[in-house]
Image (cartoon, rainbow, N blue to C red; front, top):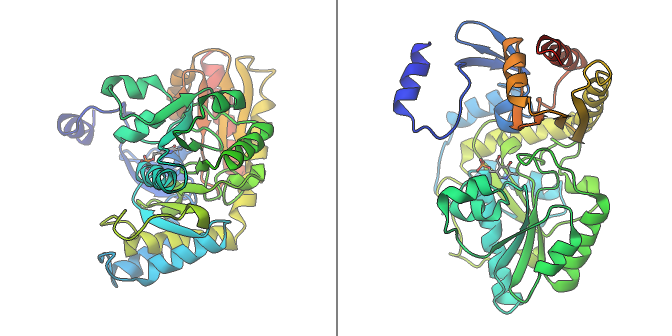
Length: 395
Ligand code: PLP
């Protein structure tokens, strides 16, 4: 066992299972461990490294910014955060934003904004409806919003004001709506819940219901945003415009940054009602600006769409050979390989052995989230490893 693994196991709280691999270097879609073994990285720092490991334009921006200005108080304006704000707002249907540090914090901010809206425009309404199977982060409020018992049970009683209803069922949202409801919050594609895609009709009906009842519609695009699903924002794929969008993961190309953006009518914070020390930090913003410029300038989102279809079709072509494959679902490069048996853990271990990192997001669902710059050759190599690994396991 590696010295690093022994030390880490000694010093860290045991909050999550780790693979016995020490990654020391990354470049594009590849990463290497301390023994020099090469992996195709389809975990991507949990769908974060949208341009792969250490993309040159982002590295350059980080280096330059680190030599110029790393952190200031938000009491002052800075160039990188203003540039980032302009890029995000001018390339979306949103009007204003707030910058923070993570996905959970972005969602917390969105929930606070929705409560302010409820207080001002809906007689103090404060409840947020969210969906079963959802994942919105690890803060107390966000585990209350996340409709998965395994995250909630260890911490009950949970903060109140979050109502979990059945995924993709508009009648469930309608039944849960009352005078206390201020917002509905959902991921346009559920990531951690197993790559669950809601129907177009559901998304449209949700938009109509929220508009009719003066309730805000919040899209948690922490995982789906910044090109991951084949459009800069996943709301574009449904042609449904939310009132608030949250972002993180792919925004900073590996640096920790989050954001929530809102339509004018929902921008109801007054001075002093929200804030962050590190949110909008110049270093993270410089990385995010370089990342977004590359994604926009090189049509990376449409490449992600094409590559998502390519990988999906190539996996589906293995169905006859490996009957354990049920289907493939998702959008763009947020791909869920659904299996007929609960073998995702051992399949991930086998692909890892064969040089491909993927995630066993559910017992019978493998999540593939390669960098959006993936090439056909790399996609072919990944599917080949999946094929080989399934054969080796006797499926
Ligand atoms: N929302 C979604 C949809 C996520 O997938 C995640 C993380 O996986 C989060 C929120 C939480 O983000 P973070 O871990 O940056 O707090």
